[in-house]
Image (cartoon, rainbow, N blue to C red; front, side, top):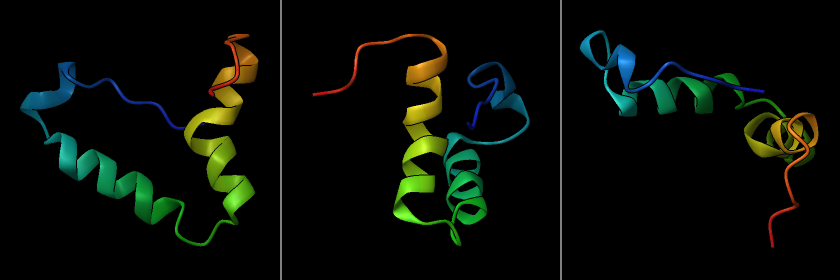
Length: 52
């Protein structure tokens, strides 16, 4: 799963730069892999309710 230290790191880079880096890193992933990277893994790990 992706994570960041934003907004604490705001002095080093913008949110747009961070988000675009995540998108580029996930560019070659399948839809299922992207879902896991951007939400699924955190939902399972932290035992959060499934999004509706």
